[in-house]
Amino acid sequence: MDLSRPLWEYHLIEGLADHRFAVYTKLHHAMVDGAGAMRLANLATDAAASFAPPFWADESRQPYEASPRPTSLLKLLPAAIQDEVKSLPSLVRGLATTAQSALGVATDAISRRSPKHPVRS
Image (cartoon, one colour):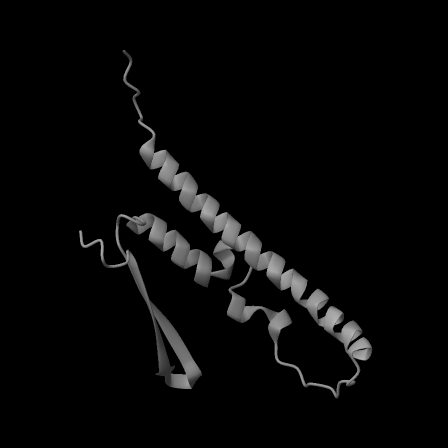
């Protein structure tokens, strides 16, 4: 194995029909096995496989028209806080999904390492 190369590659493919894009991923089997890779791919792209939609389908992140903003820092602060509070549910869902994925990968790795029949001495 060539340790000078990473165990993964991600490529963003742009310019597809209807303003679509694709993500091409290569993962070394030392990093994740086929079943684990499919679970990660399904979790990232299938809303039914996850309790949260993919980040690009999050309705709270829909574009909105910008309203004129006040120029004083004290007048800007309430609007900035309001914007941050509005984004919290999306952030929490994203963190929960990431934690769930990491826990699943770690659980799979631990279960593969533990011997099924321990050796007694």
